Image (tube, rainbow, N blue to C red; front, side, top):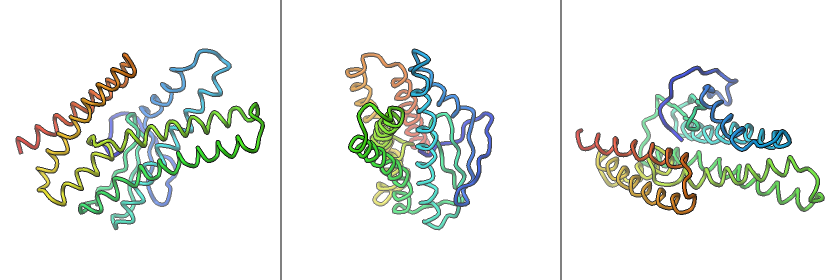
Length: 232
């Protein structure tokens, strides 16, 4: 996911392939939320702690996918920030053409797909080679990683700006329309998608305040984007 940086403390991590990496306090808060929101007993703690590596490596590798695509497209190394809404790959030199934009947008989901497939594959191998009551923590890690990354892949590919699906749609439309029109159409598609997603969430989750807050945030973002295209 590529969004603007959020304010707050952040710390620099070791660079990977020349890409500078930062982690913000809000990302740590995000990890803590998932770890502790489902914690009901001390016995569950080792299993709940599996959220930490899944979120950290899942988001980091996703953004490294974007960063690698930026570099492959000739824009050099990027800065990756792990933040409260996931992560962001920032490349100030980038000015991609539509094809490059599609490639960069889909590189992150491609990395997430690889993680999901490796997690599913690892779980299948573990189930085939070991007794069902052994390696329970590892089984939980692989199962949770497969589920989380599959969900993140599908959600991230929805045509919602600024998610990667919305970014890819915008660059695809840029092939045929002026940038302002492409941006306006992307925002309209995103708002329609969010309305459908909200209705499905209301039916399936029967509440789920967090998902409605997230969908509401994206709806507001795309509404403001649409307003900007009208006033430009």
